[in-house]
Length: 125
Image (cartoon, rainbow, N blue to C red):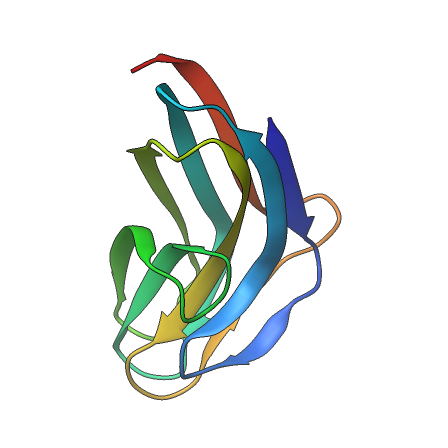
């Protein structure tokens, strides 16, 4: 249905910020959608919790799904958030955000190790 990627590294993740924007699709009423946000590698300067969120429209939008990965500091790990949602018929836009609870985090990506946000129609609801 909809898909967007990020290949550039973000080396200064502190407060919540948009990592993947403008995943837009036309929702159909009474359908179930699977939302998936994946980060291939992130780390933190100190022990911290990295919060991954899928939101409606923008960084102020309603949270559709959230996941927290605890990082002991100075190590790389990946994260994935998967959720299911229904929407009113019409155009719908989602964004993926990342937030580091303490210190400075980094989201490390490349053309072959990219972050993505996808929307799949999984059937009637």
